[in-house]
Length: 375
Image 1: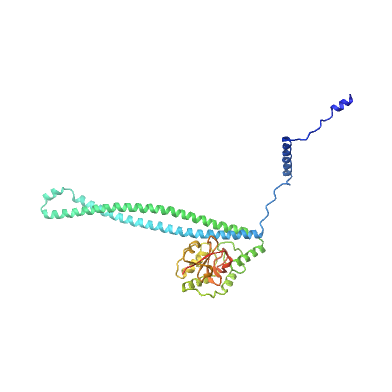
Image 2 (image 1 turned 90 degrees about the vertical axis):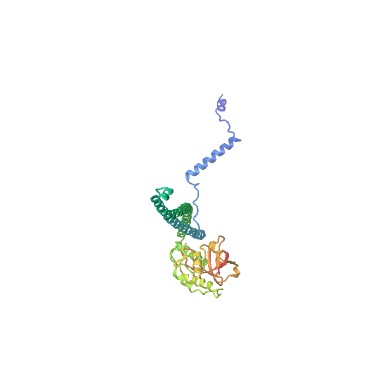
């Protein structure tokens, strides 16, 4: 009997889970483990590592390049905005002139109507019958007929002028809409430039003084300059380091002669601009961006160039790299976003980037995209 009671209280043997039950149990166990780990903080995602100095430098270089691309788009939008402004102003002047002519015609027509009203109270046949001098009356009547013809012509002219003014005003409305679009595009590119330059300044501020100096040395070497000492090369319009400018001015000029006097004058102008700061959108005389410098140099030689890099490349005859001569325009990057003025000996004068002055640089330091001979 005791043995029976002992057997009755014995716990049943546990069987292992199999099939769906086993999978459910495993899932619950894993979820519980994950919850416990999360609660203790042991499973928190590791913080993303700070970028290395090399990564910061690469990002800054990309930002400067992107800012230059945006600058050339800004320059193109600025030219379109100027053209739209001139068109709107011209149409406004034309509308004013047409309105003045219309008012004059209306005044003339009013004077004629007043005169006819004063003299046209009697029927013409009765006036002839009552006239003491029929010959004089008939002569006056002939004048009145001619006056009527003039009046009809004047009315037709007024109708034409009204139609012309309406057309001018419609064109002015279209040009005003185009001007608003150009200004919006201008603001977009201006904002993009400022944002990218601000981002570059922020990134450079994360570098140590030694890393920053190393970056500046590498950047200046890539653009043909000497060591940089400016406190902030990332700001647009920051005054250039004058020691660098003097080093560039003292560099030997290319021994290759310019092919003609105009090219020589363009090269001479570019030499005179060495040391002046880069400022996006600037065309001189105290600061330049890259296409602003080449445009100003050739303007000094009596040649008008378009404003942007991607239009300047089509402003003359294309030449190969092996055919380069002083005065040729040399272009870089696949998007034709940078330009310099070739001076011979594998070198150019260009405006490199914000914070870096106009200087002499080897054309081999950037990806060559093509060249154009202006004159």
